[in-house]
Image (cartoon, rainbow, N blue to C red):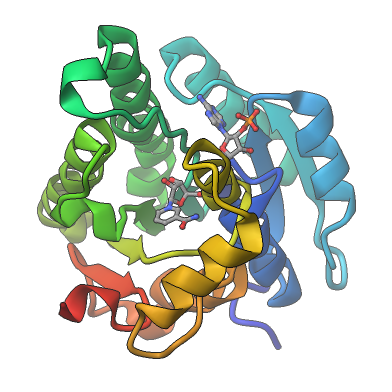
Length: 255
Ligand code: NAP
C-alpha cells in the first residue's frame, strides 16, 4: 500500500533533475504521474522511465508553464488522460544569473515568468479541480537563494516570492481541503548546478566538493533528498502542515 495509491501527481519541469526525482518517488509510492516539461518528447521519454506500480499510468506533456493557455491545456490533458489531479508540484525553473548592473530586462522577466508566474498559472488551473473535490496538495520549489545570493537578484526575488505565494495559498485554500507548502533546497547536484559551475569556469566535481565542504553535513544534496521531503509534504501524513517552507539544505542556511 503506497501513500499515493489511486492519486494523480503532476510535476512541472520533470524531464530531469529534482522534478524527475520527485516524479519517480510519487510513482514508487503508487501514483499515476504527469511529467510536464517544455519539450514534449523529453517529457514522454522521462514518463516512460517511471517505476509505475499496479494500474498506475504516466504521461509526458509539453507545456510552457509561463503561458496561461499552455498551463490550462496541460492540466485539462492530465485530468482527461489520467482521470483526475490530486498533487501539483511547481518545480519548473531556469536561471539567468548576473550581477545587477549586467542583468538584462529579459534575464529578469524570464526568471520571474517561469518560477513565479508559472507557479501561479499552474496552481490556478489545478485549484478548480482541487476545490471541487475538496482535496489537493500543492508544493512549490523555493530555494536557499530566496535569502539572497550574489548574482541572483532575479532568482532570489522569484524564490522569496514563491514563499509568499505559498503562505497565501495556505490561507485561501485551507478551507477547501487543500494544503500548500514549499521546499527550499540548498545545493542539489543537477544540470542546473552543473551549468553554474560551467558559467563560473569551475570543474563540476570541484564545484560540488567546494559546496559539500562549506555545508554542515559535508555533502551536496541529490534529487532524492528533495523527493523524500516532497512525498511527505504531499502525503496525508502532512495534512496539518500548510503555508510552510521547509529548507532541505544540509544546514546550509544556518550560516
Ligand atoms: P533543471 O535540472 O535545470 O531542470 C529544470 C527543468 O525545468 C528542465 O527540464 C527545464 O526544461 C524545465 N523548464 C524550464 N522552463 C520551463 C517552462 N517554462 N515550462 C516548463 N518547464 C520548464 O533544474 P533542477 O536543478 O532540477 O531544479 C528544479 C527546481 O528546483 C527549480 O525550480 C530550481 O530553481 C529549484 N532549485 C534547484 C536547486 C539546485 O541546487 N539544483 C536549488 C534550489 C532550488 P528545459 O531543459 O527544456 O529548459
